[in-house]
Length: 195
Ligand SMILES: Cc1cc2nc3c(=O)[nH]c(=O)nc-3n(C[C@H](O)[C@H](O)[C@H](O)COP(=O)(O)O)c2cc1C
Image 1 (cartoon, rainbow, N blue to C red):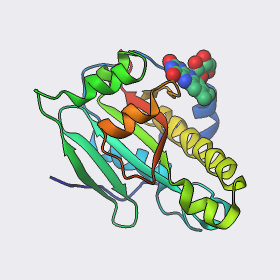
Image 2 (cartoon, rainbow, N blue to C red):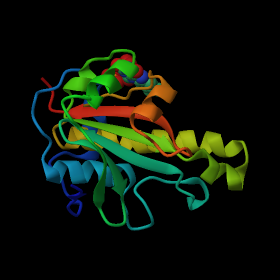
Image 3 (tube, rainbow, N blue to C red):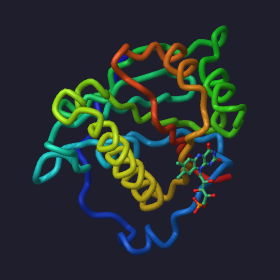
């Protein structure tokens, strides 16, 4: 089942400055789902629409980033920013326990398995190198940084915690999540309520 997300809110309980001040890496999560309002807000911060184009800048407005989320017990979803939709790509099931494997391929960082939500930032390198050549790779990674920071700050503003994960086995993650050939996973961000 796909998930229809809600429109973002532009007012919150925390100022941007407080959110920057409070941000830190959280590696222990409660067994508590993230509400649809907060899920919607996180995805919007990652790659949603804003007054200009999207919430994250992109070199030449090419937008090489694709966002996936793994919802514990539910499975893997691909974010469609225009429709504000999460399209299910893989259903989680007790036999496979994909989330456990995900944690394992992140060098057994087991808090990944605890988090109700893991956001996976992927890059389509061919899309950006077509215009910018090799330099496009640099631009794509810079954009991933913009995107991740938006997510971390939004998480804090929503009363959630997160941590950026860069240590994982790229090929294994791509195979496990059955990512399209032209996508590379760059960053994984577990998010949840701090334990
Ligand atoms: C590129 C990058 C990769 C990281 N990879 C991991 C990781 O694989 N596992 C982890 O627990 N933390 C990871 N971190 C988080 C850092 O350990 C953390 O940001 C640092 O210790 C500073 O702490 P703070 O985030 O609480 O300010 C990563 C951070 C960055 C910027």
